[in-house]
Image (cartoon, rainbow, N blue to C red; front, side, top):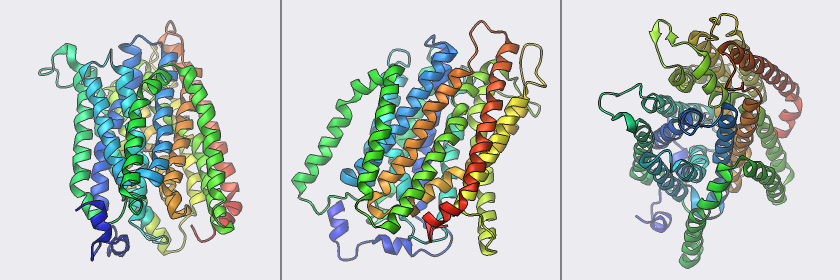
Length: 509
Ligand code: GLN
């Protein structure tokens, strides 16, 4: 059935009938869960390899790898802002997902063909593709629920587990690239090709999963232009596809030159703010108060991601030079653990935190979202104090314990659970229907700034190549000590803002 037929058919599967589901979760959430799981496999597979690949295969210094990593990640998330906006206005969530998926597959195939020569081209396709995919699948989860359905946070926590199953398995793909896995059947000169290729296969599975199950989604995610003429709609849709392809060379140049990334980041933020204020003029005071609250959450999340995202940047290089291979008696690759263990903990603890929140809600003791965010920051701070503490048990060549690194990630994961899925859920609760894609895009744009600052933070604590192991250990952990304090301060400020946030959020908890 075509999109128009679904809309016009006598018995359309209305989103309202989906929203009237019984039980804990709407069944449509599983389609989105699996599709997002495979997309995140692709994305985190690539992310986990970036800094390492640039530093060992492309000959970049640690400092440069950090900056470049931050730039790539900043672009990824900045494009989610554009992707969210285009979905609201032109493509709708579904077509955005399909188009984004196709671009990501293309990017991964290019990287699989020649990761050295086609590195930036492949990455650029992945950046633009993620922009179309990532925010819109999250918005679709939100649309499975009525505005005040209290099961929404639990739905996002479940979805977040899917994200992390994909991220955990994808994150370990670096071990293939490094030549530490499947060595007997992958020719030694093709390790990286296979590793990037694995990401492409994952993305193809994600897309097939979505295409297979999208008809269960009723009217959710259809084009916002279904009532416009077909010529106008097609023109705008194909125009969007064409522009996305046409800007590939430009984005490639910008991504590979971090100075341009700076310009880009200086521009997109103010642009998004002006657009946000312009959109606000269309709504009443009550709705605007909620939008303002959403904006404050977004601002704080920049700080959170700037610290959290050391994981893919400086912590990845720290794991390479300063962490041993012993995880509770098992010999493990520290980079693989660095990339994957956070997700493992999120998968284990997401349902537990979910149940805890439901139990607290029943007793009316569930913390408000502002306090949850604040708690997220306190955990983040504690985790970075833990990374700092690795210097105390370090060997004379500057190797710290993988077990302590893992403990730090355990704590980080709680911080993430209190902030990230709650943030997704909040964006869908605090935004009017027609601004959902845009606000989700803004939420991820905050991650873009977070990633960007993460790259700068990471570069600022990167030791010189000539440093000894012990000097590297000291330099990195000094940085983690400072980051820990930034997190604690942000958490305390946020909790103190609770009365103001409560007034702005009104009926939203
Ligand atoms: N780990 C989460 C995801 O990939 C959140 C990422 C982010 O918002 N920075 O969806």
